[in-house]
Length: 429
Image (cartoon, rainbow, N blue to C red; front, side, top):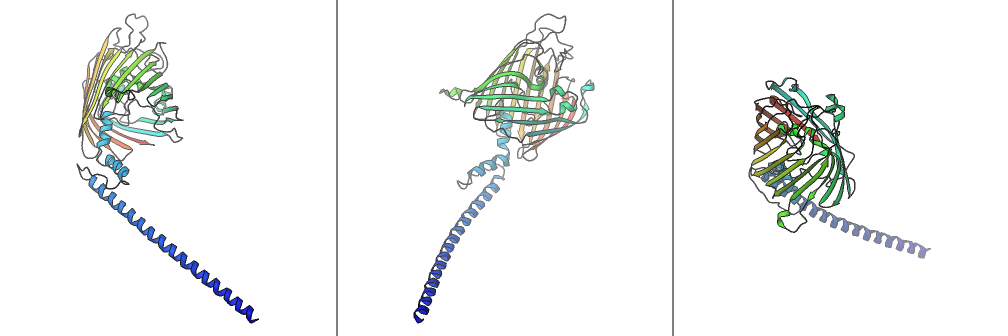
């Protein structure tokens, strides 16, 4: 019995000793982990302090603080663009994404929603019913766009304001498919924005003035047409002159509305060259035929030639566009209608010059001169001068105040015939 008791005591002592050793080992491991965690927290706090210092420095006007740590570099880059507004301002002036395809983002179930409201007062003399009501929803649009896989992309945009205004046929803005031949070439087919000039393609979300220039609504009502287009860039070629050189070549229905009304095809081409995101120049051409009024014979050509440029230097931005061509015969309508002052073989010329100055952040003051010679409704030369204030409110909201001097009313698509406009838009992604 004594031997058994002794054996049990020895067993208990060994177990207790082993348990004590395990506990000591666990304590040592936990102390080591705690020391490592303290080091990580200290490193994280150092990074946070560095980022806070850099953000504070970037908030000072004219500062160009460099990233304090490698880990902070991406955040610093994003902060600098969003804080002083320089990158946003330059991108709005130059428009580097104008005419781009949808390959940079995946097509998702969540749409992009754009809502724009406008207050207009003091109608231009002679505008009559062309003056829009004082308070209106100038745009309500929902858009899905992106690539489906590495080769296929698509886009669709619905504009609800047309349904509200009694034109359900114009509900569909965009409806197209894309095929990516390679990194530099895209084929697009369907209904989409025509690749002519700068202002036709600039998004309403980005534009400073309430609407596009007068020539846009006369020559390109709705800015869209149906057809097929080959686009891309020539950056793969070895010569330096081909860097940042874009091209667009397309064939479209040859009409002034989304449905084919004359069974003709218009051909369009455009080239655009960018220089270090500070300067861009472009040239555009459209060749085709248009409808003539019943019982009228003569020149039915639809030929347009355009030139545009965009330049930015520090806080200043300048954009210009000019075009000339055959007078348009029809406005945007389901059934063909004809402008009162249209004459076969007549020509129009038009131009726009916009200058802007960036204030604090991305706030901008601007002035724009806009002229259209030979209005197809009245036959008059229309001149308009706008000046205003453009204010981004957060990342997804824009507010603008615009005053306009205009010698005659215009009757194009998206016409603005009020002297004072307040426009507020929001984009939700």
